[in-house]
Amino acid sequence: MTLKNSMAKVMKKNMKVIHIMYLIRNITWVKEENDAVLKHLSKFILLKRIPGKMDIDNSIAKERALCRRIWKNVKDSCRNKILSTHRK
Image 1 (cartoon, one colour):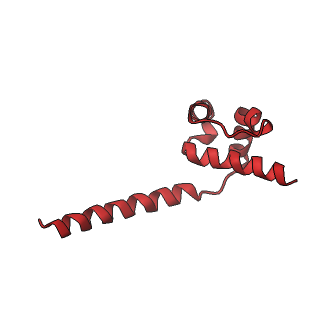
Image 2 (tube, rainbow, N blue to C red):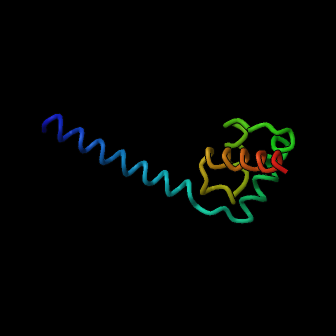
Image 3 (cartoon, rainbow, N blue to C red):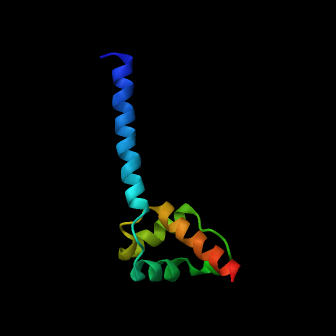
């Protein structure tokens, strides 16, 4: 196998991973998920601070509604909620 072929295989695999991450990222949030974020992370939103990874992982572990989300999705949701309250 040449270097060019092996690089092509790696690039193809990376594109599949990127595509899967894009699909995970763009799932529409349902009311239960938003309620779970507010239930567990509302103190950070009220303090206008973005929660850390450990806090987000703990809330995902405690709340079944957040099981299909990765921690970055929850962090982005918190950041968007903080920014939307800041704009009002």
